Length: 233
Image (cartoon, rainbow, N blue to C red; front, side):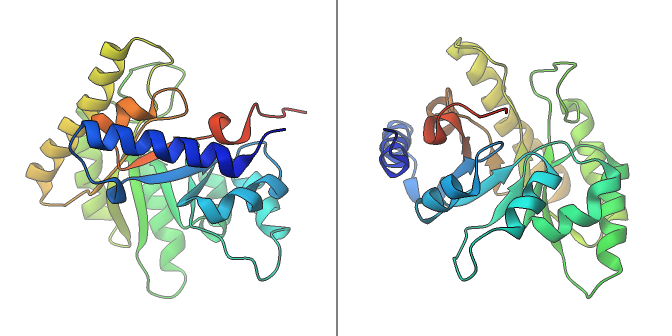
């Protein structure tokens, strides 16, 4: 029988190994449990051992929030899937941070909805398609600076705190290092161009998070290694 707490303990042990190998401090790396298609019962079992919860779909997050046990604490929820502009309002009600900003139109839409409420700044990351796969969301690396500068000008209520990418599905470590290292280098370029600190790099999943940590990840997004295969039924 699968033990979620044991799975998380093993992942954290591997995170520590990767951090030590690359001369990093483990405390600067957060573990996100990706809970797409997994039931709330599994999420509540995992939540005390996680730093973050990641959901791909707005409606799924809305439904899970609605049945979250009253009085049970939860770590912050991040949206990591593509955000449709007609779901911005519900996303802002369900998530603490959106990692998947890939267009100025979406960013402006979020800024507009936030402006209708009380004064606050909402944290976001820019999603970058480092693998340049047509089927994936994310801004092209060469367009990231333009997007960030546009957000700084047109979206005063958004706080851009980092970058996110989804790597190529491959076991080729050289390819993975090129993708993860490329995002880290892009972050440095954007820091120099804009003066923003951009402290977070969300990269690395169940099969490649150790490589991502060695290349500078501050958030690893782990699903199947924690919860097992997804139930698509």
